[in-house]
Length: 146
Image (tube, rainbow, N blue to C red):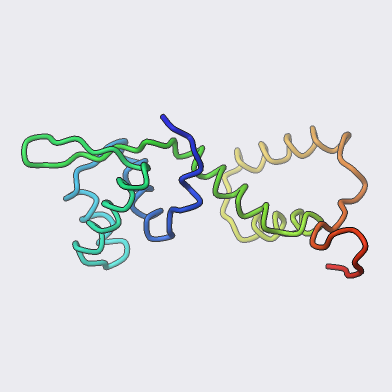
């Protein structure tokens, strides 16, 4: 499975289609249209367009089964999520990323297992973490603060 950063070109609407296909492992167009249509009240033609774009981008593979097309993901869901999040974090000030994580955690429903895993990872990172992270918004020689 290719893991090139296709995720940078996947739109929010296309993510809705990908989530359905990832969850089902593979899906025919009727199933995708039914599920996404119920979730977002979008027309079948719109959803077909999204599916076609994802095939062209290399995010979905298509196979024909009789008259039906079956779609399977070409990128693993976790890889796509990791790449999308990393891309967003790369656009933020290095000094402010920690606070963005805090806000995201506050706004995200997490299971007790998720929370414990976060605690464990943060505790493991704490001994080697720097005391502060410098702002990387401006090149050296410019004044300013975040």
